[in-house]
Image 1 (cartoon, one colour):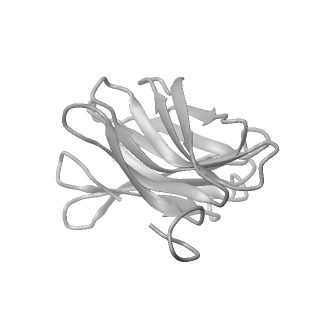
Image 2: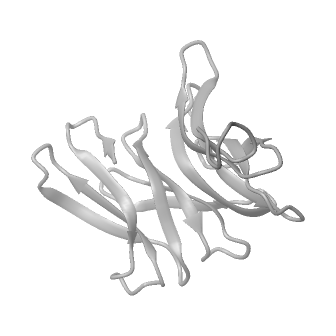
Length: 180
């Protein structure tokens, strides 16, 4: 969910009721009182999910999640719509294995950062990933973090002065099975 500049909200998730694919990204815009203004679905013939949504500085909306519709293996799904939910572009971010994005954040330079996890080819464990894309969704750089277990980022925020703060989980470190 994300608050919009007009005081309303964006709700992002998935649905299997659109009959366009096995599961499609679902975006709903509501006003400040929760009245639905519009809804749209996006995706292909396979499974597509949204895990994060944000309004961009130009008034459009950016969604991040996972797709199985745009080729194998499944990868980060990045979509941009206009203020009425019309799809402007969609991309699959390929990190060399199965991946997804749990968070998206506007970067100070007009691009975006995505966070989530990836299981790269030849590995069995998840590594946390941070990916920087330009305003058109083209990958500028990618970073991986992890140890001998599973590691993932759940959210990302830009911080004043540059850089990002991330939150997530790990089985590689800490004192229990899953630690923050």
